Length: 156
Image (cartoon, rainbow, N blue to C red):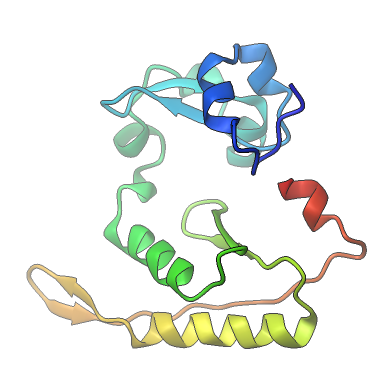
């Protein structure tokens, strides 16, 4: 199957794919058991993270492999970003606490306005902390445009 990130049958395909098929994908895949144990870790994810599959498979993802993902701040940032975008836009986790906002059919001026809207929404959001009350945080955001229309090739 020529499998794209936005294909409607992707989840079903991923559940049936073997390691060789997962390694052929152009995006990272981490398959976990219900308890968070990593069952599969494909080549693209390994290249992005710098972690060899042999050092990841069989370990608990949230506490042993990527403890930074077991973090309310990360999850909350994702939620705030996603709530400020259009339905065709995508928020993609990139690294530890970094996110990419993929904005199809968006020029530089509009992308800059979106970046400022996301920055303002994150800065205005108070995150409750059990022992210290609420905190605010800031983010740095940049805008990049592809030299050609590779965005549609990357996501579908």
